Length: 364
Image (cartoon, rainbow, N blue to C red; front, top):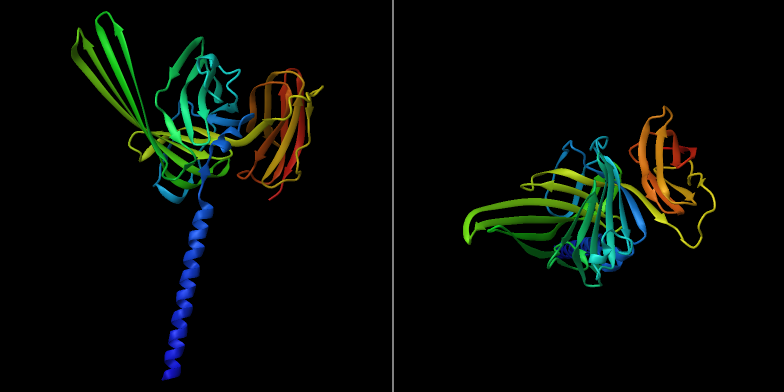
């Protein structure tokens, strides 16, 4: 009987130790899985650009999903054929559209896309430090029309991680022949989830930023109020270290939302402006054969519109890796074929009168 009690006691102790080890393992895993984006992470993106897909007139709806940690947002079934190809560039403010209006900016990101009526350009200006990100405003140009927006009191604490939140507000007053319109904008920002974002272009470790925007407009005539309007919207942006703004959805109630932008998964980097190429060159992709991603390098000695596209053996366009104006330089582009079947593909570079095509093989 005594021996049996000792065995039970020993078993109890072993189980307790096992539970402690399991607990410590889970805590350690959770700590390792924590996603954090610092000021240095953001500033390190300077000099890079990404191909993005921007929503066209056809609305594509997705379920937002719950908040919390260890989430998986699976949007791999999205049909990207209706999207417009654009570019997302992270640069110094110098050279940006109306950069002179944002003298304290040290970071700029540009969203550009060629759509019917011309090329749309939106430059956003930030001041990024080790402990905060200040949104200063933006300037845009399209079809001969320009606009400038200055943001007040939009200061996000850094680093950004699950639970980070801040409030931004601004107001504007306009007067015209006795009419006075006061507009007050309030934006509640909170990082409400983290996990894996699965897109047709690949998987990304992301934080999800939820922005609740409320605009109140009050109009009066000769100091007598006669009208008011309140508009409330919710938007979600998935943030990753490598791409920052990876996926965006506009919503009303937070249950369903319309996709407005997604990263295509390819990243281009200008390598060394002091070593400008002397001729147009399209390198063989490496590795080749590949699975599921490969790197394509090309060189252009002069600035111009650059098109880099992937085709299957039937000549059908599979992906647009680059479609924008590029300065002279040496470029590196990553192509992810995770959702494509194994086989032979072709990639073609076209800029000005230069056109070159090379073959690559996807093995699975």
